Each structure stands twice: as C-alpha cells, then as structure tokens.
Length: 562
Image (cartoon, rainbow, N blue to C red; front, side, top):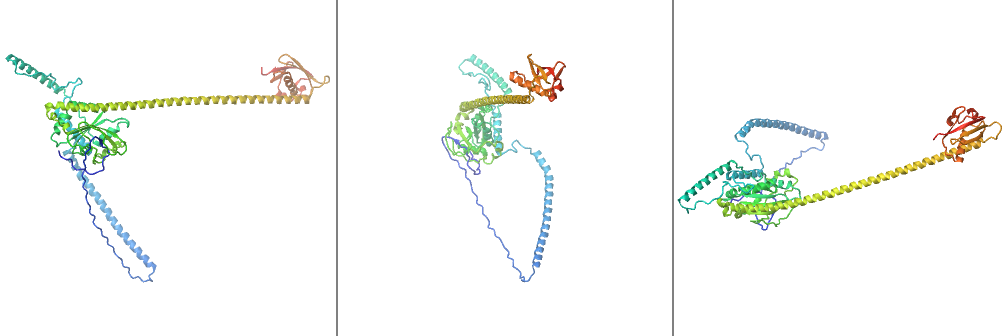
C-alpha cells in the first residue's frame, strides 16, 4: 500500500485507544531556517551655522515658524495625491467587478457546482466515502434477509443435480426437472428484481470531529454513548475493493449496521486513509494492514489523560500513540462550532473489536462463492459486540432511571414534608392569632367592665354627694312628696325640697337601687296624670315645682333596658 502524505506536525492528540499492545508511528517534521538580513541605519549630522551670540530671540522664532509652514504645505500636497490615488483605485475596482461578473456567471453555467463543493475537507472526504459505498451497493445489489430468516436471491430450494447414474428414462426426467427448476429460478429472479429495495448506507457523511461531537452531545454524561464503528479503506491496496464488495456490502452486515444505527446503538464512520481523517485514525489505532475495522466506545473525560493501555480487541492489537492535530490535521476545526459544549480534546477511547488485514481478507472472502462463511463470522463478531454493549447501555439507562426515580421520590417526600411543615406552621400561626384575639377581647371586655364599674361608682358617688347636699326635709311645711312606683310594683315614698332639681330625684333612685340591690341601671320617670315623661339631659336642672312634682306626685319608674 502507499503511505499517506506527510502531515503538519502538531500537538499530540489526547484521546488514545486502550489496547494490549502498542506500536509507534511518528511523523517527521522538517524545520526550515530563515536568514535575517542585517539592517543598516544611516544618520546625518547637521552642522550648526555660526550664529553670533548677539542674534535676537525673535529671529529664531521666525525661522522655526517658517519651517513649520513649509512642512504643512508639503503634507497638504501629499494628502491630496493620496486621496486622488484612493479614488482611482476604487474606480478601477468597480470596473473590474463589473467586467468579471458576467465571466463568473458563465463559469457557473459551464461548470456547475458539484456535490462536494463548498464543504469542509473532512466532510467532503466522508461524503466521498459514503458515495463510494453507495455505488458499491448499487453494483453488488446485496440481498437483505427477511424477518423469517429467508431472503435468497432465487427463492428456490436446493436440489441435487444429475449424477449420470440413471438410465435414459431417468436422464429425460432429470432434464425436465432441471428445466422446471430453471424456469422457477428465472421467475423468482424476475420477481426479486421487480421488488428489490436497495439497502441504505449506514455510514455517516460528516467528518470525524463532527461525528465525535454528535456521538457525545446527544447523550447524558452518565449514560454510555453509542459505539463508533471505524472502517479505514485503502484504495491502493490490492484486496480493498473485494473486501468492500464482499464485507461491507454483505446483506446481513448491512442489515445489522442499519438496524443498530437506527436504534442508536452504533454510529458508522468510514474514511480513506489518504484523507486527513483517515490518516489521523490510522496513526491513532496504529494500523499496519488494510482494510481496517474497529468498534470503539468514546467517553469524554473532561481532563487531560496520559497515554495508557488497558483494552483488548478481537482479531488484532491496539496502539497507544496518537499523531494528529486537535482539529483533525487542520480539517475538523470548523466542525467544533456547533458542539461547543463537548470537549473533544479530552477523550477516552476503549477498543471492543479490532479486525484488520488477514482477519478481514481471509482466503474464503476473496472467493465470492465461499465468502458467506467469513462474512457470517464477521457478522457474528459484530452482533456479539453490539449486543453486549446494548446490554451495558440498557443497564446503565436502568440505573440512571432508577436514580432519577429515587431522586424524584425523595424530592416528592421533601415537598410533602415541606407542605406538612408549612401547614403546621400556618395552623400554629392561626392558633396563636386566635389566642391573641381572644386575649385582646378579654382585655377589652375587662376594660369595659372596669370602666362600667368606675362609671357606676362615680355616678353613685355623685348621687350620694347630691343627696347629702339636698337633704330630706322634715314632714310638714312646704315639701314635695313623691311616690315612686317601681317596675316590680313596689311603692317608695320620699320628701324633697321644692327647690331641689330633677337630678336630686334621679340621685335618690340611684342610691336606693344600689342599697336595695335592685339591678336597675338605666331607668326613666313618667307621670300618668298628667301624662308626661321626664328627660334627665333636658330637664335635669329644673326644680320640682317647674316640672310639676310639687306638692305631691306619683312617678312611674320604667326599666329602659327591659
């Protein structure tokens, strides 16, 4: 095979596959020497003219100002030339654009853009490999097995051909049977051609860096990402074409890769070893024979990792060295913009399956009639590795979901506890508010009762003071005899001075009710003959003569609260 073109030296890549063996592949970098031409500088010494010491200062200032004016005039002339030159260049640029525009349109019509124009180098290489696989699939027309395990191209059962051991009648019967079988095969072949559906290509059409970013960005960090299937194709290898036709375009393998890719268990990436991505992967895995196929798992570590080995693969040994720039030798750097949240410089690559050289190019594979055995073995290796990884991913997903469910239950319990705690706090606050309200009401009631008692005591004291001042006149003489009829029917007689006012009557009744224990606080006075009611607020200062209670009267006492 031909060696890959020499790459630019760069910092060593930080994600290395773990394997049981190591090899060394170093890129040779040539260093150039640049010679620096010595530079010389010239200096002019100005000789001072003999100026007499008696020259006035005004002459020196005049010379300086003249020099400044000369410099300004020269600068103005050069600025005008520069602006004129700028306008001239702009005019030439516009004329060139106008003249080149039709030529550009004609070039687009004569040479229309192709499929890979305008793409980055890594994406263009991946699309080129995908196009190669699709062309090979169209040429080979592989048979995809049905769900029941069938899918033969002819759909006929195998029968023994003529063995030449029978007689003439037997030969004729065998010929007829062979003719019928041939017709059935042709009919089955025509039906198969009519209903044939070409399988899709399982390989992605993005560069290596974008593929890694897609592989890592769509999964939570704690989950296992899909496996990465890497196939390196060397077009100059004499057996690569046969391997591509009889291995990658095998119906069982295509069906397996398409199914697993659709389920998200594997991402297939293929590259030509003469492209930057292919050379990068060749050096990364230490490939010494082609074609090369590997199944690896990629994890983002988020930190620098020292080269170390530890994984093992079937059918080959891994390599621990990495010779490639962080941007896929200058071609993958444009793909990192869409996946800025994924650190592609700190990766751990574990090798699960490795097949190269003789493992893929065994003698049965080179013979199309006997290629089924080897393709079935490779299919078995791929299926076993993918199934094992799928089980691990399922277990990891189950554990993550279990942790999430546990976290959800804990959060729900915490939420319920917080709600119960809040309800208890609200009940406690409500209870305290009720107690505080009851306490305030009790204090207000006691205050009202205290004030009421104080008012009654004050009223009683005023009534006693008024009675003591008025006094009760003796019988005989000019007096006012008043008979009070209480609400309970009891009669009470009392003598008053004619000059006493109506307040003295109310004071007497107040003191009497207190001394007799009669619960009558709010009362009114009235007479039947004449029919009249008395008001303490309006008539309290009037004398008994003025209100008609002298010389005698019968006064009815009414309970105003009854």
